[in-house]
Image (cartoon, rainbow, N blue to C red; front, top):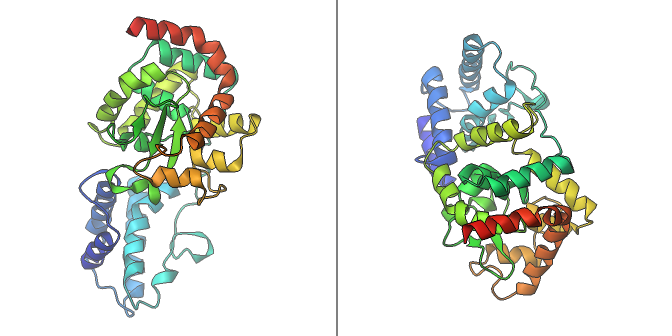
Length: 321
């Protein structure tokens, strides 16, 4: 199993020294500590399944309220590495999902969906970000522009991805140096239309803060900020910005391609010219008219808040100069 894991992480270019790759390695270590190392062959299917089931039972004994999602997260890459072993007839039938599930695992709880913020909620939120700027509120301000996750913000490179002094200020999310956005996140270009001066000043500090701590910690901290402002309900969390942005974009009747370019939904045309510029190291340098289309759409999405907050934004800018 250890050999299978080593081959799996090597062939899938998983960096186990940092970020998500480090988490995967830690999960593998926790599972194999319980199962022990073992042989993977056509003759060992029952033994492998029993070892994994014993791990599940052990975790449930330690924590009777453990969720199915947690168990699946612990085992997903472990099982993927087993299935990656060539010429194993039963590998593809090893699963934690649906009818193919080979294990006794609790029923998956329905996740708490992030709420849609009302216009009044958003006015309060934006006003707070602009009048009390710091690294945390800035992270949330960027997130609100298209439902950006904390991990995506932490991967930004200030010298390569931030175009905040451009005619149409924007940020391109490409997934950092390893190009994670191409496979695990959402490559997109996000025009900045609210709080530009705050983001210019604070975003580099925000990125530095996010990378100075465990990559799981920023979301917990940001959720706590949001709940202190908007209420303690469990559906108050950073992911609600994604649902809220989609609602606002529908209200503004934005095209599907432009929705995809800004927020990364799957239904857009992945091969359109707008998206090609996300992958281009030069970004939109040669095609500012494409960027202008997205910028104008983003302004339309947030138009009522831009008008309402114009006085606040001016006060912040005058204070900063």
